[in-house]
Length: 170
Image (cartoon, rainbow, N blue to C red; front, side):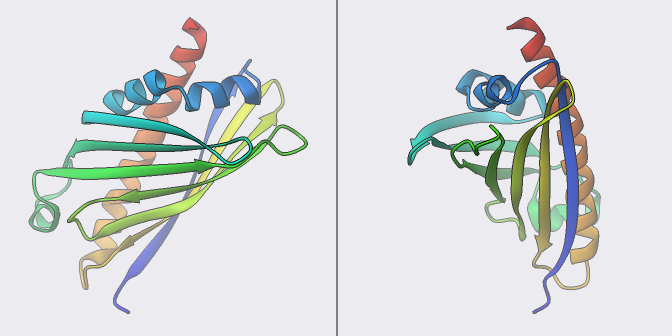
């Protein structure tokens, strides 16, 4: 298999907000739309669907500008159509929640899959994201993963900023 992968871990901290409050934000279609537009998404479409006993599935499709080096544009084009699916399970006994994240990049030869965890931390809540970025392109795959990893980290930083502003104004 010529696919190579890169693991990325990130966390967002929401001080002053409990797990239930942050989870309510994360599953609010208005917040999900604002977050995706705030991180560069265009034509954002959001679907939030209850699943099982207390779980939620969030599906977001959007068009992202391909802010990537020239060598990568021949693989992905000027824009990238992405579909992100977050599947959150029911609350655990300590109010924490676990979920799965996957991002499909349409025709681009990249995929992101991983886990989500929302848990209490000190005076607030932490959202931990652990993903694996895979690029199915021999030779330049590693470079593409590096680019995707950088984009992901920038998006996480911006997402935390948007989330803190959302919580402060609600």
